[in-house]
Image 1 (cartoon, rainbow, N blue to C red):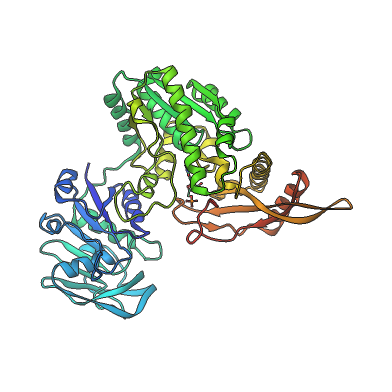
Image 2 (image 1 turned 45 degrees about the horizontal axis):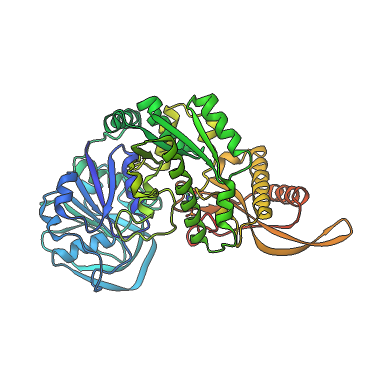
Length: 511
Ligand code: XMP
């Protein structure tokens, strides 16, 4: 299949480039910025995109690609920092602009070919975020578009098909930016639109069959869309050679265990092994307050419980995981400058001596692509629409020590939030909605008595892919209903507050 690769120089938008191209059915993959040319030859991309990034090309340790990349004869598009890399490589000049250009600018298109082919407008609103700009263009390059403060906002060398954009075509604020990316991928690089979810679903099943043969696969399921889709794909491929395990870690949502059992056994007809390991998890988490240690502990106990199961029910040759593309990248596995934002416990895991090979059928997919596959596989609607839930469960929604009381508060309060959003027809319009509890206490009045109870925080966010998120402007009557039910129905909760920080700078989960 034809593909485009994006070298990740650390921009928060690198993923968006991939997503935009996949929306045009062109396969696109994110790779580390320092990938060597032999590996690129192996990947055989039709075109290469350099993402933006926070560095300046002139600073000492700025990330640079393998120089031989410019000699491969493959079309290249540099975005923002990537644009400056190109100018620098071909001996143009970059200068630091006095006022950092940030936000909307108007791009006047001066050439309607290649990058701007079939774009009707003469000017486009575009989104800039940079402190450096080209001062002198390298030989062979011409200006394709300019803004009032950047004479070289779009440049290109048609002889070797190397282009640069000072603005970000991948963000929604850039008008027709997706068309510009499409033009690079399809018109200039000639990548065909071959990425198709229905074919892909069948390809994944066939690949699993070819890879696994008659070996046995162990799959951890959580009831979430990723692991459920992963299990169905594998089950379609190898039937009873798949063993699914659901671990109750004592940190699940209300009624979660029962509904997962029902879905697997009654709706999907896939046998499910259920392990109740709540005590083990809660013991390991006792007195721990540090968020990263909480995650690590959950991961360790998970691995231990799993190892025990694998030993006594095996031998298994494979471990299946519903790891998604953003998990792979966010955990720094891409090797790019993307930092480890949080340790996602589902990447990596079990001890080496189990000799399990890892099967990750969803490794190259984004969440919405997994949803499309799940739909094709007839995953029940209530799962397709259920909000995502983190692997470490309620542990990342309890600030400070994890106690039975705090688990119960956060579980009941989250169930109330979900129920009310469903009643108000808002559940499917938001990305996630849940409660958080910590050690903050505030005074309340119960009957005639003053009591000191917990403060519960609400978190309701909208998002497309969890990379960025905004808090939902819930109507006051909904907030009021949630607050009143939580304080009336849950013992020892006196106050409810609403969190109004977007991501970035906050994250969706509090820990
Ligand atoms: P953050 O909090 O990083 O969350 O903005 C982004 C999305 O990822 C989920 N999340 C996790 N999922 N293990 C998971 O499987 C984790 O440790 C974890 N932490 C966050 C979160 O619910 C949100 O959808």
